Amino acid sequence: MKLIIKQYLASLKEREELDAILPDLLSQLGLNVFSRPSRGTRQDGVDVAAVGKLNGEEKVYLFSIKAGDLTRNFWDGDALQSLRPSLNEIRDAYIHNRLPTEHKNKPIVICLFFGGDIQEQVRPQVEGYIKQNTTNNISFEEWNGDKLAALISENFLREDLLPENARSQLRKSLALLDEPESSYKHFSSLIHLFSNPDKTTDKEILMRLRQINICLWILFSWARDTGNLESAYLSSELSLLYSLELAKSYFPKKIKKAKEIQSVFCSIFRVHQKISSDYLKKIFPHIFKLHALSSSIRSSSNIDVNLKMFDVLGRLAMHGILLSWNLQIINEDAVDVREQHQQKIQGVYSAIQQLINNNPVLFLPIKDDQAIDIAITLFFLMSDDNNNPFIQDWLNEIIYRADFAFLTNGQYPCHVHSYAELLEHPQRNNEGYREEVTAGSVLFPMIAFWAALLKDDELYKRVQYLKKTHLPHCNFQFWYPCEDSEQHFYKNTEIHGAALSNVHIESSMDLFEKQIVAECEKTADFKELSAVKMGLYPIILMACRHYRLPIPLHFWNIKKTEPQ
Image (tube, rainbow, N blue to C red; front, top):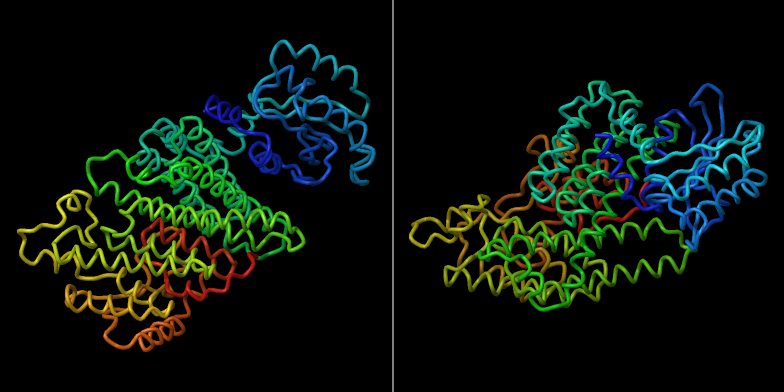
């Protein structure tokens, strides 16, 4: 396990990776972190600063972080941020001008922090520098990959807290990264162990969250090295959902332990966003080319292409939603940063439209529950009215093609879940088959509701025609969270929620919209979900996507409050 962790550390970058795990590690060691990494402000060589006792006497620990191995170039060469100049800044500026007054009389340890090892050709220079600059009050320590791996193993993955079978699940997940489903299965078993502690003290919950964070980082770094992020993506979604279940009772408390738990949860959130961003970087170059992504799936079955393309669409839309959510917490005065973020969001709008137009398979879902990915996409696109014409064209095309599929007995949307059965869909010689596999639908009533929101009477009438002509037997329905949903939403431990069945779309569009809106107002349990109260509404959408739950209609009128 130590070798696995060391390899993970060596692969991490300096910014937002190594400096993301160090504060948690120091806190777990019992130190009080009083300065964390920041961008855009002068740090005078110190990336992280902490105070506390590691070996008896209370000391101040000042960390300067570098990625990978410490080479001659990264020690005092041509690199933009070599280590030696940073150490000089700590001695010359930070200690004298920025060290808090209450810590000035304490012994100071300057820590050379890097994920790899010191290369032999540079070790004499490093040791000579340390001997020359060590004083009665200032000493130096080397925190290399071996030391970090040992500390992580001892403090995050201790045998008394994490049994051997849990370590085994992590090793199996890493070994099977080229088989994403198997890798994800083992990592999910690990998450289940972390999220069901025997003790529920603040300290235990904080430990579990830190373990999830570290293990997810390890999985991500290995997945990035192998060039296959599928397992890391799915695992990060699950990690975030289970972490919210552990942490939700600590929002918005202001006590110290609550702040630590909130900080680790936010760190897990950032890891997921980073994995999502890296995943989509691999896809973006191909989005703007006709059939490029569809053909890259390389399957002889159009079922595989259909399933994967809608999955990619949902992930791309979720990424856009997270960007929109991030925009809410960027300071209004940071005009340039906000403008850059807006440009990224506009880029995702364009990418989604190009993805759909360049991959016509996205004009007709084969499974009714692909309404989830469509709804997430619509929720993101609706935040800009300029997208409305595209939305209308897309939904109209879905209805046109569904009508044609029903007429010709082609691959019309169904609620078959078994992959083997999907391969045989539709079964043309099976009497009563169509009625069986289209007994219920959330897709078509969702499109009818969107037609009402967009005041598109023609689209609404086409859904009415589809229902009357091809699906008179079908139970059009919507899903709502219920009072049990808060308990089960994030871990999917039990079936929860309620359905509004036999939705009548025979009435006028206005009456249909009023009926649905009134039902949303009556079912207030959505507003009681902790993620909604906390302003973390993307997590509800993420849970729906991950566990394949229909998107609550309340989202079409959600107030995007600032996260707590």
